[in-house]
Figure 1 (tube, rainbow, N blue to C red):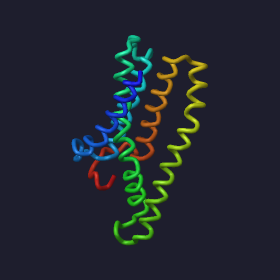
Figure 2 (tube, rainbow, N blue to C red):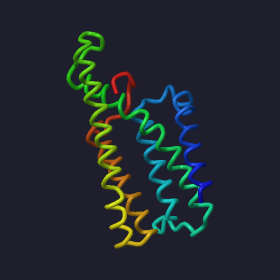
Figure 3 (tube, helix red, strand yellow):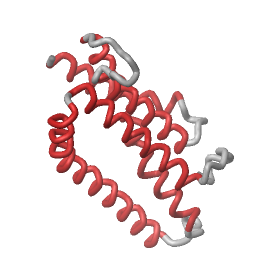
Figure 4 (cartoon, rainbow, N blue to C red):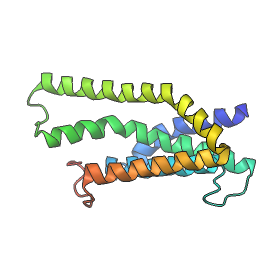
Length: 171
């Protein structure tokens, strides 16, 4: 089992290095949502998903762990720049016009991102263990896969207004 975790970390590292170059022309928000969907599918495969009628095979669990690691890398890499760009567009902050304001904005966004990550790390074991106790392992993984898909859908509706992606500088 230790090999599975080492492969997961290796794929996260590879994803962090390769994905920005491979998808350089793709809008960051679209990349983030696509890779979060890949992560959700990886979580479903780690079950293996009863909802998707996957067989209970060890290789599916290993592949799901790998997809989850590979999908997480770009989702985390692009989160802070996308939030900062969104705030600059929303509040009409011209880049380079006020270094102090941009520094405070960057620090605030990085702090909020790290706070949300830390809170997730603190509460995830509690919520996950309760879901596991109530639902069992395979249904628990389906549940969290569906929660992530619902989050991505909500994020798409709230932050893009269901509009098509245009110039990725405005995202």
